[in-house]
Image (cartoon, rainbow, N blue to C red; front, side, top):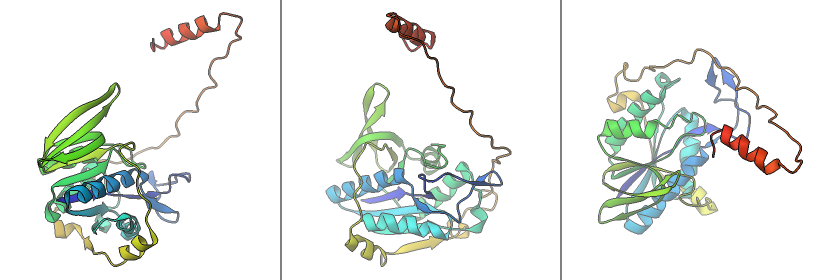
Length: 254
């Protein structure tokens, strides 16, 4: 089984994000593997350990994104693919999906795993767009997954619990943060990651045209989110429970 995992290098979410020309500033600071992607890497490792096969991590970004790939390789992934091209600076979600889908086709796959959304962009649209471009099913928000008789079985997390979902392979899958507990890289894994193969590709290697690699969206303005209000306070004179209930009714919570 050939399992591909989409990973992304992002500015450390523990530090304040900085903008330059209405775009997230990605150089000059600490960059890390998106924490949400570690759950996808772990899910892929568990699947291949149970069913056999290889885990390939795929990323699109600057040359520095190699660090995120090496992190995933140190966890146990077998090889990596990095698409790095100056023409992709400022790429939007659609361009990202097009480029990643082309790289996935070139690599070959039985299952593509991704996080629900990236921590920095948070669009949540890229996995679905990739599935559409590849012409395969999308199984999303998996809190548990397994493969039985070449069929993907997941528990899809919902507001009320979960749905049991089955999908034929090949497919694209997104996993939630509750799907597993990502393993820590061992010293041996870190050393082995340095010698694992990583294929580096340009847009021209993927058959993606200049028009397809051109962003279709621009950010014209960025404004700070409004500050959270202080809330409503009242003295509990014995009618506190009723006041809370009235407040919740007004908010249409109950």
